[in-house]
Image (tube, rainbow, N blue to C red):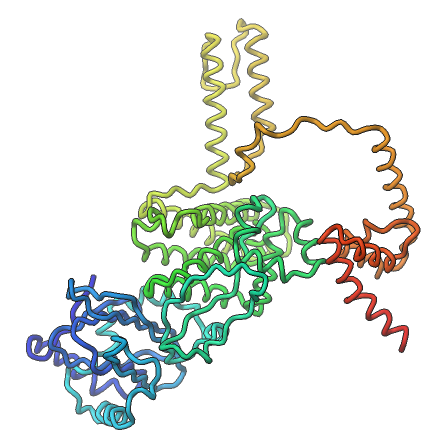
Length: 574
């Protein structure tokens, strides 16, 4: 709820509290000064929104805690509704470890926003402000204490506690920077790179927050939805080495863990807390600045993480426990109609991502906690405790999603129970059709029912035993089951030729004696598969590059020559 900042004349009791705060607490902490703001301006600091009253003598906020992340958002006055700010918002980042700091940004009447740089405020204004603040001779309403202004600062801590100075440096953001919502661009051309733009060279009034491309890819998903349209996936696959591409597509069920490890290493220096902080930073920029690019990054991060396996949850237990806690707090701040907005929720994979995340976390907790075998993870009592906390957080997340948005997130266990109940209902219906006296056991048959009922029961028992209980996420291929081709008839000549190739390949592999060559076979499987008995690997590379019939094969051949044969040649010369 928006609240107005009172003036001196109408709120004498509040004025005295402001005055005591100004005179006693300005010795420590930070100060953000925004002089000359017009009345009706909306200020949001650390989740608390206030509207400047008219007339106002407000200059800034003081006694701001140090060594923590703060985000101040400013919206210009709304002429139609003076109780709510209007237009787009701009933000100011405050994060300093100094005991005392001050940020001064004067109001620019032309842009109707505070200036981006401190140099915009003249030196005389700055010096007078600092002297007046130090001597405590300012108006009681000029500076408001942080803990008086921010009534919900404790809730805000849970939304920003993982945002660090190191993360801000990765995003090329600094203390005192003015940030503006980034313009959304879906760059999919071949010239785009994964490097972040240099914000320091921007000449505009404020910095845009740029994020690295995050892939949303898994072998079970339809390529038309991701690999050919999604920018993060395109950039990820384009920058992979041929051996990494082969490893990704051959890993199948664990390919999500493979992507997670690469992203964690390449973008976050293998710091789990920095990835969690990025989840919080992009969410805050979306929530308070309305930045759609930040929303896209938040969505892609959650989707990428949700494609991991339950074994990854066991390996990074603390990460998933903290991620679920963050999501619970974040979803509590989202508007109730968020998932009903077409602009935000249409085809963005957010709800399926949360579904997958709950499923893998639930599977990891149930299988690991109930496992009696001691291994490197389950033998750790701390890890077991964190897994139990993950299980609790999954239930809390499901509760928040259903209570606020009426979205039901089912885990693997709940889906299994529902499927078993549906199968039992099907058996009961079949028994009723044949006039069977149904008991409490759906597989119980009367002795006089005859062989027909026994066959029905055995049929349903077989279906029950062979059913594969897992959460299935629909793809475009699910709608084309009826159009699948029938069995393919292969001629005997082709079978003999295939057997000959397999025999030649096995004879060829038997000649490989060095462990180094065996390692190269794993790194370049397509290249070694294309090698004929009368060729060495270099001749195979030359033939593949000359024919240029397969893109992946050409990539492996060129990569092998650049990364292996070049070093072999150098060693021979030496």
